[in-house]
Image (cartoon, rainbow, N blue to C red):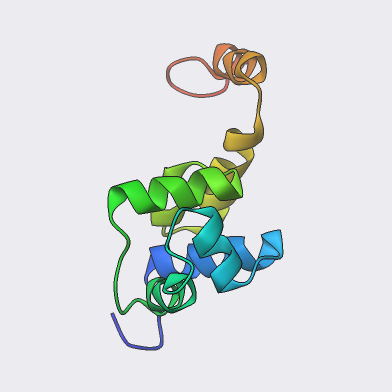
Length: 107
């Protein structure tokens, strides 16, 4: 992958943070990163220099109200679908799954 193409996690993290209206420091602190290193660590995650461990990305995902899978999704349309899925209630998810069936939408 070239340096001009961001890794999925870096791209999704920056997109989600900006959409939520947080600075890197704010998001980092809200996700449990020490206030003195929050901005630098979030910047490193967004630039792809370092990747957060699973616990950290889980905290970031909870803070942003997104499923962890969203951050690892390569396809933009699938990332949108995962984001939307994360906002559905349990009842709405069950209803959706009932309508799609095990192999896709039913008619």
